[in-house]
Length: 80
Image (cartoon, rainbow, N blue to C red; front, top):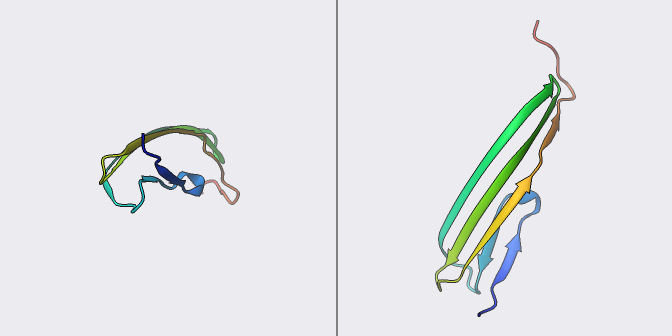
């Protein structure tokens, strides 16, 4: 089995697996998320992200992540 280099971006922006020259042949990516507004200013949810990359040499790798977003609206004002 050949060693495959890997690089992962901060905050889940992108993930890339390469075998040297960095040329990718195919990337497949899917995500699903579910959000719930607990209060007018608080949104919590979950996201499942899956990806597969294949480089030009045929080496492939997959990655699965679960992300839990939390959003608090600081300057929220109710509609008038």
